[in-house]
Image (cartoon, rainbow, N blue to C red):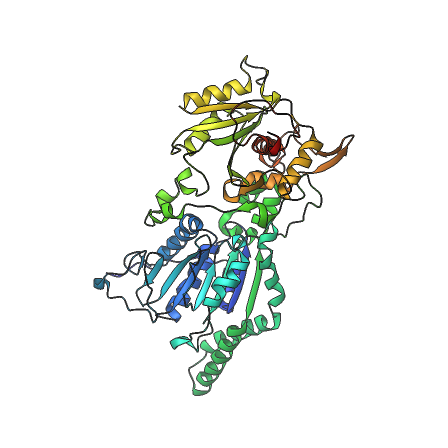
Length: 541
C-alpha cells in the first residue's frame, strides 16, 4: 500500500537556508517563522542520511528545554515528513534486533539520551545542566536550538572539541563537523555571542553558492550530453568545496512567514507582547540597553541560574505530555522539607508573589507568580499552592510590612495580610508571619540590595531564570531617578493604564515584592516572628 504524497510548504528564508546548505549556520528567526519544521528538521534529516552511521549532537541549555520544547516540535516535523517513532527511529533505548537497524560506526555506551536511526545514524541529547554530558563523545555535527540560552564557555570547553577529529567514511562530506544554531534574537548579553557569526560570514562565498545552485539547476533542465554531465560534476564538486567552508548568518522577521500566519497574527503579537519582546521575538531586531537602573549590579552570569530536576525529567521516559505538567518536581533548587519564604506586592490591577529560600550564603529566588484584574490575592495564593503541591511540610514564612495592613482595595474589612493567611490555611498550609515594620525608604533599599548583589554584605541574591521570566525583565528595566534623599526607583509608570506596549507584569510592581523578600531574608533568614528595623545587618540580629 503506497503512502499518499504530502506537500510541505517552505517560505523563502527556509528555502534559501536549504539550498545554501553551509557548513556552519546561525539562523535567528522570529516566533512562528518555522525554524523547527523548515530549518532544524530538514537539517537533521540531511545529516543523518548524507552521513549514515554517523553521530550528531542536539544541545540544549537544560534537559527540560529539550524535553518540553525542542524534541516535541522536531518529532512532529519528522512525522510530517513521513518518519515514525519506533519505526524509523527510536529514542531513549537501543533499537530491538527485530528492527534490523544498522549499527553506528562508533556505538554509544548507553542509549538513555540517544536517538537511533534506521541507517545507523545516532544523535546524542546533550544538556548543559548535566555536567559532562558531551564528554567522551565523538561527533560529526552539532545542533543547538534556542541557542541564545546556551553557555558559550561550556560550548567551547566541552562540546566544540567533541565535534572534530575522527573523519571516518564521511571525510568528503561538506557537512562533516557541521554546526547549526537557531534562536530568536538574543535580548541579553548571554546570547550575544551568536551575533558575532555575522562577521564570520563571507558574502562572496554565499553568493557563489547561490550562483552554482542556479547553474546546476539550469544544467539539469538540459539534455544529458557528455559535456553537460561533465560540467554538472564539476559544478557539484565546486559547490561541495564552497559549502564545506561557508558560514551562513541570517536575521529573519516573523513577517517572512506572513503567507501562513496572516497579518492578524502579527497585529495580535504587537498587541499582546511588551515592546522589547515584540522587537526581539517577532521582528528579530537587536535590542537597545537600559544604561542606568535601580539594580545596576545585577549580572547575567552572577545572579541568574538554571536548576531543573533532571532525575525526575529523565524518568518520564520521553513522555512529552507529562513533561508539560508544571510543578515543583521539575525544580532542583527548592528544598521540599524547609519552609519557603514569600513576599507580596499589592495593587488593584496586578498582584505579585515572589518565593525564595536561603541556601548557605545565597538568597535563592525560586519562582515568582502574578495575577491580573479579576484574579486577586486568593487566586495568587492558590496558584502558589498548586505549583508547590508536592512540598512536604507545607510551610511558608511570610515577610510583610505595613503596606499589607489596613487596606484591601477599599472593598473589604480584611487587610491584605489577613486574606493571604486565611487562603494559605484554606489550602492546608502553615504560614508564619514576619512583620518588617514600615517600608524602607528607596535609598535604603537601593543600598542594601546593591550591597547584596555585589556580595559585600547580606546574602547573595540568585534568581532561577526559567521561573522568573517576567520578574527578570522588570528588574533589568527598572529605572532610577534622583530624589531628595538620593536614589529612588522610578515608579512613574505603575498608575498608567495597561497598553499593548506597556504590560503590567513588566513594570516595577514585581520588583517591590522582590525587594521585600530580599530584605526579609537578609535581616531575618531564620526567624518566624519579630520586628527588626531596616538597616540592621544580619550579624546584629
